[in-house]
Image (tube, rainbow, N blue to C red):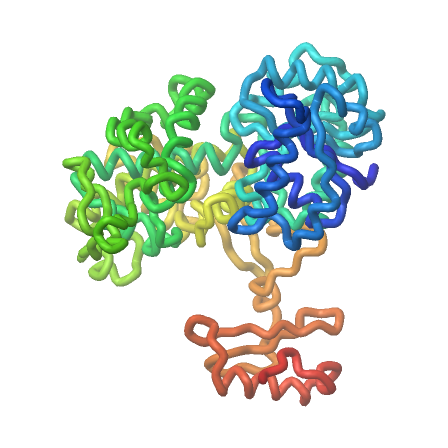
Length: 510
């Protein structure tokens, strides 16, 4: 297996520059190239400006400004020779097949043998990217789909083709895992892969159903948020965060790439208000605001848009009885006889059905789909973990009652959960109807797994001390908001009575 010691990134846009910065954070030299600008005498101006912006980025792209010294900038006309000693070359240019393939031909002419080339695309299938290119290039080609911002988002979706050599996949996977700190989820070569295919469906369903049912944005975000284990930004807050202007482009790409019978087309309806907001500069937090804004002319008043009128009004606290009356039981929320309950179901029901339909298509394992949504969209629970909260049979029966498709994996599960614990080991259900042990990547230790087969060395209401092996202890906070209190201190102090931890406290309290 090869070893990656130097990286190149071609395309100094937001994603490309962010990937280059994170490689530099890991201490590796990285070449960052872009096109030559049409105007001006500085042929490296675009890449140089990208590096300057990285140093000013908020949140910070570099772990320290000193990491920037690992980045060498240039352009693709004068400096392609810098790729000759690179072990991994990442393409992050505009999503146009002709431009990418023209670039690949230039890369192939200068790269060293067995160097891996990857694309950061999430919309163009790998099979099309390497179509017409040599076997030598195709065997070294993969897709490495980072999520923005690359330094902070742990998910990396990995896709490879029929001609890709296994060593290329393993080399990049290992580097991204051990050196860049990514959780690598291996996907099939399908449009949107896993996270964006399901995530875009979910976002679009939540938006169109809010309009359809006449909800306020605050109500929608309160429902499609904490009750479902989703960040409190909900949907409209999330769109403001990532940028409203991104949504039409992503939806158009998905609509073009997916088969005509794909469920995505049922939720991909035009939203004129979003088009109007974008045209007026309301592209989210990076613009004048989005579905939410700060009105500085009225003392920095927080405002939200009225979906019915399209006008901004003072933001208000959502009043959603369906949430309190469900008593934190998800099925009760989805069955609640109210507009809010119907909204909860009409968003989450089809989303979970769509997730189940992706097993065997976007990925073969339910845990890959769960991992992609937890890490790519910051869901607390993956879709199959949510299905387990409801019950696969409960979901299948309700989908059938509503006239919605029931994916085969739900029929396979029947009354069984997708995840179970047997003899102290976590198991997961497969498409074949059999359970198998849930494996962890090399070097990964999950405290949840440790808890299945052991008891804490010390424990009280605020903290616990666990032996996780190899002479290492894990100090777990269980207090409200993980705050430090006297009980936390007493558990920490008590470690001196336990073997090899007796000489040194795990945490030093001032």
